[in-house]
Image 1: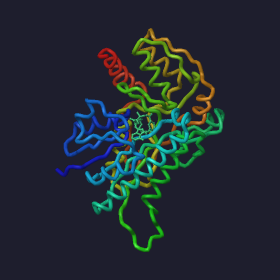
Image 2: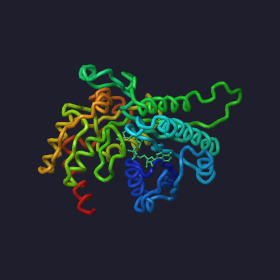
Image 3: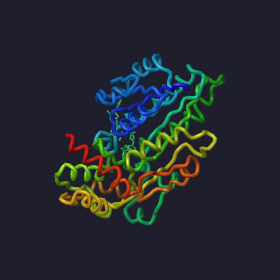
Image 4: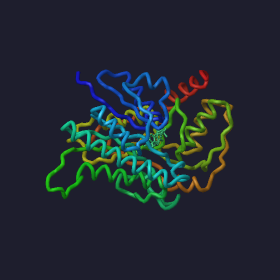
Length: 340
Ligand SMILES: NC(=O)c1ccc[n+]([C@@H]2O[C@H](COP(=O)([O-])OP(=O)(O)OC[C@H]3O[C@@H](n4cnc5c(N)ncnc54)[C@H](O)[C@@H]3O)[C@@H](O)[C@H]2O)c1
């Protein structure tokens, strides 16, 4: 079997951990992992090579290109929504300039190897922007091309990078007399909030769901920063990893677009609280909305229309709300804190 070399940026993050664990269980894959922070030992041992470095450092990215031939790049490194809102210029650098650097890396790699290089990019429901809670209630399930008026730095960064990816794939240096060669096969999923049982969230606006669960499992009270009726889409982390892998594996000719919504379940914060309390009856969860973060959540859709992903590459999440808690989140999070 041919061995594929896969670069994962932001490998030390929540999704990176899941992807690395997946690839470690499969033959024929060499994972090259890169993150600003040194990878933890358990993930390190699952990788072919790990690098501590910055995606804004072009010299460093060039040295990676010299050392490896990448078949696929999973570009995960980013500053998430809450952090991005607090440090907008740094967010723009990491999220936009960093993505541009990785697209250039993909093109260079493609030229050097004389074949297409795939780039898998996780975008977010933060690219959507509904004017207010009333419009959100009326809108129902949002399709990929509707309401893309984001009101956060993160959402704007993600929407622009989706378009950069399309440009690199379809129009890169379109005026050159002699085509320079090099082709990126850019594929993107717009994720809802992801809930992991084994990694802690790091500054997303959807973090109230994983925080509620983790605090309950630790036996600590939680002040939820949104109203009880707040409803956005969520997904269990194993399905997030599955979405990226399935999109990567899909035959190009089946893909009618490069940007796909993926949905799973969409409980309100109140429904989340009831489900967490069913698992951890002593949990103390209060709603203390932060009006500024609430306004951001009120601009994100209550649900997404993921029919394109279902049709084109057979998207079908394994975990609905009940199964996610019963079979993944509650057993794994309980085990996680027992071990600590
Ligand atoms: N987790 C979610 O709910 C969610 C939802 C939608 C989209 N996404 C997207 O998925 C991707 C991964 O998310 P995650 O939850 O694993 O995030 P995370 O914050 O857990 O991980 C991001 C990683 O990127 C690294 N990083 C940041 N700046 C870097 C830089 N300059 N150079 C190298 N590495 C850098 C961080 O050290 C971190 O380990 C991100 O692009 C995020 O926007 C995540």
